[in-house]
Image (cartoon, rainbow, N blue to C red):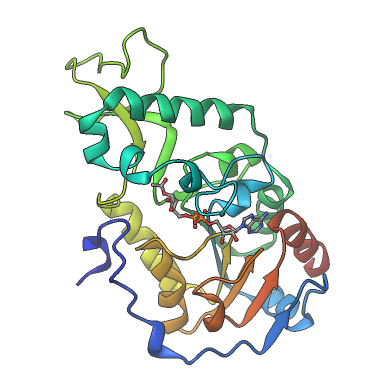
Length: 273
Ligand code: OAD
């Protein structure tokens, strides 16, 4: 089945797990050392991809999803707030939850991890940032041409015409499309929905061509995003994970850097260039 036919959140599709038995030749266990081999690999890389998840925004005060105490899914059921069915059932509730998140994100600032990726981009001949985050903090930090796999919650979309526009406050919630009067929804991909085909295609093509890929601050659980590092591996790329905990991806990576991305990424960039 082609990757773009996989619905968001599909747990069945983990195709490349068996291509290597896991070969982490360097592990870093909270000792704050960046392996020399990794610095060398990054310095000579021709095409680098960074895939980010909610963890990179954690140090900006934006809650992650699956952290046991502070994660959004510890407090709310995604089926009540992040599915098309939930929106159909109670559009106002879903809209208000996204308004709360929009306000939280508007007050947040990009952190040192976001800024380090902006820096990294300036040193590399080819660099692509792919994010699962809908908070827009990479762009606010200065990253360019970010591939947003799951959309962006600062934008709204007409449920009828699919026109995307910027959010504007309105008396009626959810607000209505100025063209056709149908309700607006956040321009994000919910569980059970397809990712935007061109966006996913671009991400897939980029990971197939890269020689080094970083997976930063993601639990590597949500498909199809979680398959992208495996696809890069299959095409011969080196894989690095930066996370405060291990994930299902960890046994497959070449380098794992345990800790906060806001500390590790600036250090990595400073040591490399
Ligand atoms: P998760 O909440 O699943 O995972 C966050 C990851 O970040 C975890 O593996 C944490 O260990 C790690 N982490 C937390 N703080 C960190 C820090 N300071 N530095 C480095 N790592 C840190 O978030 P995602 O993997 O992004 O979808 O989740 C993917 C998708 O599932 C999201 O797009 C979202 C979610 O449900 C929807 O909104 C519908």
